[in-house]
Every structure is written in C-alpha cells, then in structure tokens.
Image (tube, rainbow, N blue to C red; front, side, top):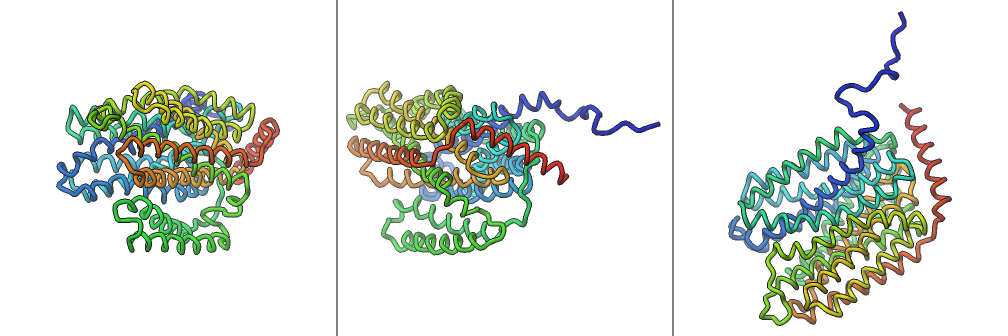
Length: 486
C-alpha cells in the first residue's frame, strides 16, 4: 500500500493552524515591542531611591540606564545581522529571553553590580523591533505589511508611555522587586508566545558572521556613547571624555575601512552610503533627538516644585499619566501613518511627522505653565513621532534587499538610539531647571525636528504602486530561492 505523503498531512496538534498563526503574528510581535519599551522605562521611577535601597552612590546607580543604552546600541545591529543569517524568529526569541533573564536577576537581587549586569542583558531587547519588522516583511502580504510595520514602530512610544505610570504605581504601593517579578512573568509569556505563534522566515543571507566587524563596532560605539552619556558628569573637557571621543573616532574609522574590505561585512556600507538608505539613517538620528527631548523635559517640568513659579509639583505617577495620552495617540494613529505612506510614499510621511514634532514644540514654547497645554504639546509631539517612526522602517524595507532587512533596520534603530543619547546630553547641558532653560530645550528640539524634515524631503522618491509590484516580485523570488535551497 502506498504511504501517505507527509507534506499532505494536517499539522501536528502542538502546532498552531496557519490561519491562527497569521492572526497572532502581529499582536504577538507588537506585544514584544511594547514589553521591550516597558522594560527599559520601569527603572526610571526607582532611580531617586536606589542609592538608599542598594547602598550605592547616585553616580553608580545611573549605570542602570547607561548599561542598557550601551548594550542595546551594540547588540541591535549585531543581532539584526545574526537574524538575517541564522533566522529572525530564533534571534528574536533569544533577545526576549535575555531581557527576561535580566528581569529575573533584578527581582532576585539588591546588589548594584548584579543589577547593572542584569540591565546590560536587557539591552539585547532593543533588537526586538527591527527583527519583528523584518519578520513582518517576510511573512505578510504587501497589503497588510504597511499597517503592521507602522504599529510595530509605534510600540516603542506606547510601551514607554505605559511603563512609567505602571512602574510608579508599583514602586509607590509595593516592594520594588515586585515590579521585576511582574515584568519577568510578562517576558516569559512573550518568549513562549513568540516561539509558538511566529513562523520562522525562510529568507536568509548565508555566510560567515563578521566577528571582527562586530567587535570593532562594539568598541567604537561604547567609546562614543559612554562619552556622550557621561560628558555632563565627568566634564566635557576632561581627559577621560576627550580620550573616549578620540578612541571612538579612531576605532570607527578603522572599522569602516575593515567593513569595506570584508567579504560578508556586518554592515553593508556601500548600501548605507546610497542616498535612500543613508538619508533615512540621518533622519532617524535627528528624529530620535527631537522625540526624546519631549519625555525628558516634560518629566522634569511637571515635577518641579510650585515654589519655582513654573513647576506643577506633580508626583511621578501623575507625571506618567501626563505622558499617557501620547502613548494612546501613537497606538491609534499608526494605521493613519500606513495609509499616508501607501498614498504618498513614506518619505512624505516622515517629513510630515518631523514637521508635526516641530509644531508640538512650538505649542510647548507658547505655553508651558498650564497642565492641559503641556499635555497637548506633548501629545502633538507624540503624534509627529508616530508618523516619523512608522515611516522610517518602510523606507528601509523599500531600499534594501530582502536578505538584509533585519540588519539594515537594526542600524536605523541604532541611529535613533544615538540621537536619543545626544538629546539627553544636550538637555543636560542647557541651564535647567529654569523655565528659560526648558524653553531653550524645546526650541533646540524643534530646530532638530525641522532638520529631520529637510533630510526626509531630500530622500529620493519612490512611487508607491511601482514599489508594491517590485516588492511582491522580490518576496516571491526570495521564497522560491529559499524553498529550492531547502
């Protein structure tokens, strides 16, 4: 008797049916992005109390933020490249697992060394968004891809807006370790759901991993971001800071030279230097700078004592609630961003978003004394950020080969991270806390947003309908290649 063809058999009981998997892919990936942003934010309300809780100095405690920033910046392009080579779902699951392990370590310990190590592990989660966007490109048909990518891009702001008031409530009414037990449980759920519901993309770019390139990029970025993040504390003219910037310049120059000569580079610099890709990265850096100043300055302004004449004296919980409308706005407006990109192209969406950010800062400059105006201005900035952040990955997806989407989006997220780090240093350098200093920070961020708008308009255009045809053809070709290789 002929044996039945295994390929014609129904799926195993433990494997989700294709229709169910298709329905779950987007919400599972989006929840992972939100969880990543929440995990990065939850430590903020703890910072004032951690010196007392851990017995460490305030300078040492600040490394709970710095360690996550550094490891995230280093690991995002590295894990993006690994995802393109070895499987995006596999690397995404590993990044979520590292994030969860870091949360468990924080829940179990009060030792500052353990906490800093745990926060460095959690930095791996910065790669969640670019890896997820690449999976969406590979797995979804073009008609569903735009809105899904826009939602995925917005999860960073949504999670940040949710994480601050959530963490503040836990810290205020429970032991601070409870917060990390909660995020550990959510992280474990996220790892399980990702492995179960998200299919592994067949699109790969085989080759040998560029270990030397990864080490060189890591060394250069650590020197650069460490200098930027610690410049205000150590002194911008101090030998340590100047030495870090000099080392970053030398190491990154050598890394650039090595990447141009590598057979399989970590980052395809010839691709990066193309106007459509390079200008998208410049716009990402400028948008990251402009967006981050909103959260930094708003939190300081509304918590300032009423005796200052301009502060509102709000608690950290109330402060988080002030930023919450912006997060809700990002969630609701992500489909609109996708429709604008489909109709006019993502560069127009990016330029519009940057212009809206600038308008939001104009509102902040006009009135930063009334609570409702502060919330309105912050929400307008969040609206512009939604449009801009949703358009950036679409620009990258349209400009790079299917086999390099995770690494290219990883570099784009890295540029946003650098922009945020520079924004934090710039805000720290202005004369705050004074009302004049806050207004100066708003003006600076608004000017950078206008620069991002100019960079977006300089990106060569791409007709949406023509691109859709090319994308469908490229995806079919990549899938056929992968199936033949298998």
